[in-house]
Image (cartoon, rainbow, N blue to C red; front, side, top):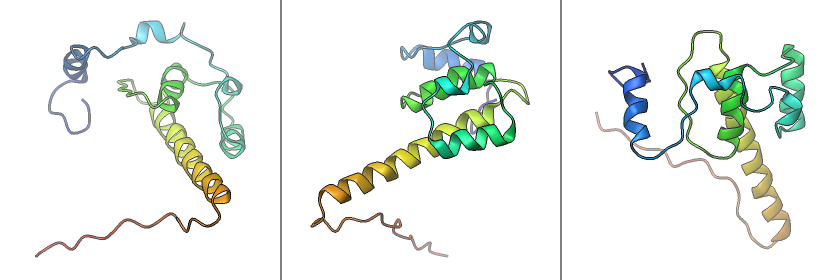
Length: 128
């Protein structure tokens, strides 16, 4: 089941397929793309993190989903425990945040007169 859904993931996937989105089924995952971490564009810090954890190769779930996430594609994964889903989500999330931060710093360096900084989101007050 997908988070927030009260129906099996396969039912949600069928609905999404009707929108014209591309899906890669688990049978095809092992033959899609490289499973080498070196073949994915990652920051040095992320690469060192993966090496320290001892992950020599990506799992099939990671090999398919990480490149798609890094291209800002929508990804839905249904797989068993231990398949690497959490890392497949977290690594691209961190990479996208790091790239965003790097881009904002580059723009700031180019436009020294611009006083734009990263700002904390406004807080909301909740009525009791």
